[in-house]
Structures are given as structure tokens and as C-alpha cells.
Amino acid sequence: MLEDKHELVDKFGRRFNYLRLSITDVCNFSCSYCLPNGYQCDTPRTFLTQTEITNVVSAFAKLGTKKIRITGGEPCLRKDLPAIIERCKATSGITEVALTTNGFNLFDNIDEYKAAGLDAINVSIDSLDPNMFKLITGHDKLQHILKGIARAQQIGIKRIKVNAVLAKAFNHNQLKDYLAWIKHQAVTVRFIELMETGNGTQFFEQNHLSGQGVKESLLAAGWLQVVKGTLNGPAQEFWHPDYQGRIGLIMPYSKNFCQSCNRLRISALGKLHLCLFADQGIDLRSALNCGTPEQAVEQTVKLLRSAMSNKTISHELDKRFTGATKHLAMLGG
Image 1 (cartoon, rainbow, N blue to C red):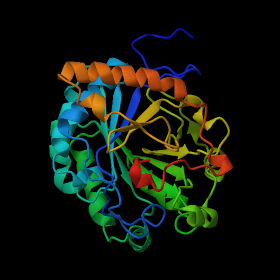
Image 2 (image 1 turned 90 degrees about the vertical axis):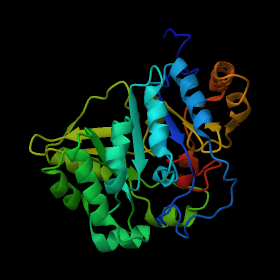
Image 3 (image 1 turned 45 degrees about the vertical axis):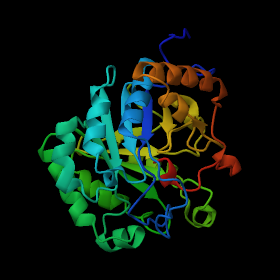
Image 4 (image 1 turned 180 degrees about the vertical axis):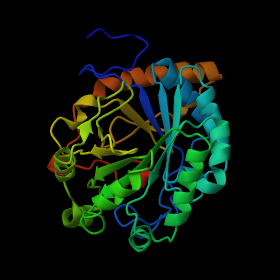
């Protein structure tokens, strides 16, 4: 495989055109698999500034990144989120800006986000049962979140996904509920296997479910697997002619899951994470604030290129290695 000097390519030939950009690690939900005791302020709160965000996105764009996903924690807690979306979308080379959110204020703000340039949203909904949703998240917000999704559809957000973490404790038997919902909804529901984190070992051991059972059920019911696009990563997606929506599966414990990895991560504190479960991040902050914007971008580009030599072939979740990831709010998953 020939390497384009303007692309981020690792030693295994994988091209990285997708950046997951965390802008805060704060979250206002207390999901049982992530922050069961709520957000604990145990890290610095010096999150990336708008200028630093512009510089890091520009550096990635120079290296072939096309898609930016803004994550948290809960990114909608930042009041300057519309400006951040606008800066990302205005960067030359960036063709898609997406947002992952718990949806708590989506209904009130989605119009502003779209006006700023937002193309797509992922909303976390781990159960369509209001009581179970409240039990999982600590908030009775399901109906308000669903109103936000409906508003996003109404104003023309074309790519809408709902993320649901598979767990024995709360949704192992709710596939039929999601299928009924997407019968007439042009939404992709993505079931994500519960991943072990540093603070979540006990919950993982008690609740992990393989997505393979869901896949087998879908195939038996006539669902067909979708061919992946160039910006798609390891997720598997399925469609059915009788349904407006689709089903996706993210199965990090499956064989060769990392083979099609195409994303890198920047933490809210400005560290490059080559994997969600890397043992440490690479601090880019000095580079991001080096001289003029042009100099900062160029220095960051050099660091990014250099870092790719340390990208490993796969995570080691199957060996119970979770790296520095205490909980998923640290990096937005």
C-alpha cells in the first residue's frame, strides 16, 4: 500500500481520517456502566480552548482527516459548543462534523447546532423504557430526549444514530422495542458491547454480553449487512427492506475488530490517544500553543506523524488490559 505523505498512516497500513475530539470530561448523567457515582472532579478543568481546538483540527485536516466527532463527557455542557462546531466545519478539508451527546438539551439547542454546521448526531439511549432509562442514567429525561431527536429529523439532520450499551442488567431483552421504534424511524440504533474500564471491572464481569447473539437474530430475521463507506470504522451495520431505520453493532471483543480502525482521539486536556485503551496519552498542548497559528499547526502535524509509529495493531481488552481509561467519559468512547 502506497502511503500519501499528507495522510496519517500507521505501520499496518491503516489510514486515519476520523478524529474523535473530546471538549470536556464533565458529564451530568450518572450511568451505571460509566459514572455510577456521578462526575468526580479529580482532573484539571483546563479544557481545550477554541483556539487550541482550531489548531488541532487544522493539523488533522492537513493529514487527511475528513470527519470530526465532538464528544465529552457531555459536550453540550460547554456553552461555546456552537462556536466549536462552526470552527470545525470551517476548517478546510473537513467534510463532516458530528456530535455524540446524552441529548439532555438537544431539543432546546439542535437548531443552533445545525446552523453552526452540524451534520450528524449520536444520542445515548440505553433503554426505551422510561423507568429503566431513569434507573440507568439517574434522570427522567427519555421523552425529552426523544423530542430532541424528532426535532433534529424535522430540521434536516440526515444522519442520526442512537447508541445503546448492551448489558444484562438493563436491556438484554429489549431488541424488539428498538426494532418496533425504527420500523418507521430513519434512525440507526447501534448496540455497543459493554467494555471493561479501570473503574468498571465488577460491573463488566456481571453484565457483559456479546453482540453476536443480536447479529444472529438479525440475520435469521432477514436483515442484510451494509457495505462500509470510507469514513466507517469497525461497526457492523444492517438493513431490512421493511424498516426505515437500521441496526448497528460494535463488538470490540470480536476477532479482527481493530483491523479497520480509522479513528484517533484527542482528550479534553489536549492529549492524543492512539487507542481508547492506550496506557497513556501524548501531550500536544505545547505544540498547539507554539508561536503563530501556522507554526502551531505545523508543530502539531510533526508530533502526529511521529506518534503513528507507536500505534499498535489492536487493543488488549481480551486480556483485561484497560490502559489509562478509568471510565468512558474520559474520552467519549
